[in-house]
Image (cartoon, rainbow, N blue to C red):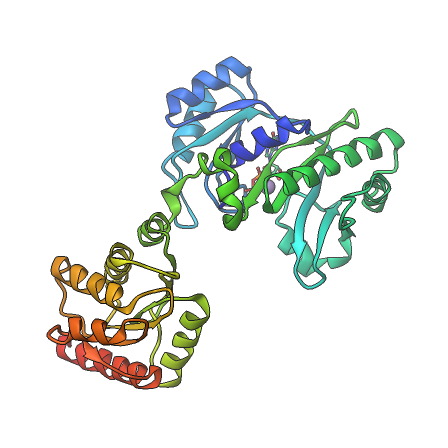
Length: 384
Ligand code: GDP
Ligand code: MN
């Protein structure tokens, strides 16, 4: 889950990182009021979950409260990479001489937490990685002791912060960001730019935190910060129903229990020339309501031309799944063909329940996939 810049900024402030003050506005008049309160000049920044807002025109300086209101009216409602700006952060504009990048990430290849810094901040780090990878300096945090003081200072020296006082300030900011990364269960914590001001002091102008979804259950305070505005509706519904769902570009909707089986199902659909419309794992022990929600989510995708149920009943009971399918079909008005391969616990009962339904039965995954691919083709042809 991504946090907005202003939310990440507030967390950084709590950990002692120097950030710019300011408030969030949803109308140009509010922008003006905040600018008046702070005292211009201010910077008005779109709060949307994309990088490169600056280049896209979503970050603008204003010299007076009136100008702030004007740029606020330009940025609010603006479309940045497909997202509509609904909120802006109005912050004190900072004058600086240099922009630095600082980030903490998990390096899955080496199974280490990496703290990276670059003297080429301000631009997206992926850009620097492409054009000048040597400008990115990295240290791996100690697995149990964390980021050690000397490592943080080495990083400071490596990016040219050789003044003792400055290196110490950088080290304390890097340590704080590392601590944020650990304590929020983040998958990314980043400050870009971290600026050097004329007096040599450092200040964070833009921070970003991405929290690991799997750890959110132990961070109700972070969960409360969730902004679902840019989350596709189907994914939002899936999350609320406790279903793992990822939309894909194909036309065969898949409902499967278990992530491994869901991936295998997608492979077999591909093998028989089909293309999955989604990855969907209803999870172990899914009951009627969950199955119903899953089917509604699958059918809300207008690309779907056939649905394949691949359920391997273990803890999940096939008859419960069958009841879910029947309940969903009673409520969802659809003529999309559906193929069911249901095996395992209570399969006889489950199949009996579905005997008089519209579902096309299949006894193996291969057969199910082939039937789904054929049904999707026939359905598409009938609509053409
Ligand atoms: P991003 O493009 O989405 O990463 O948004 P940023 O918040 O990083 O802003 C982009 C750029 O705007 C920064 O690299 C700075 O050059 C500039 N910027 C942001 N805040 C300020 C500020 O307070 N003062 C000045 N002078 N420039 C700023
Ligand atoms: Mn930035």
